[in-house]
Image (tube, rainbow, N blue to C red; front, side, top):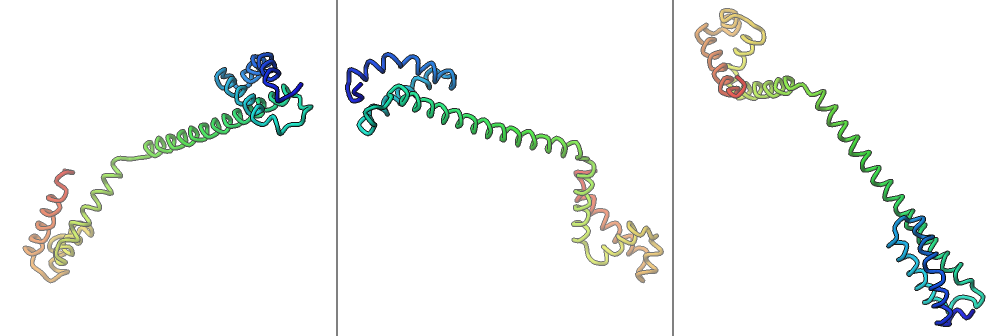
Length: 177
């Protein structure tokens, strides 16, 4: 057969077209894609027919092109599925991490830390004398008399500083009372 002959090409095309489409469709499972591959293969053959040897088995040549297109398509789908699977795996892992973190979350600890930070900031803004008196009173739990003796100030001065510190803290922590 003369591979450059329009009449011979038409006969081969008509004779093998549907069989090649069924072949491709049996692998790619998409009739439209299979038809595109077969048409592309015939077109590739036709455009390159002058480069081929005279004794080329045209149906085998075209079917090889269809086979290679199907392989490329399926490999592409396989990679796509692997990527999608990896994305889903990452999403599942991230979701599990969020669930675990939420299960481990203790709201009272969040507020305790927040309150401790607010208290520390509020105390740091007090005068040095008020800070000292407040810490001796609340942290070391000394009495007013003990604080007065230790610092060499009057009990009224101790009461003034404790009152000043507690007012400041009440104001800073008003949303938590």
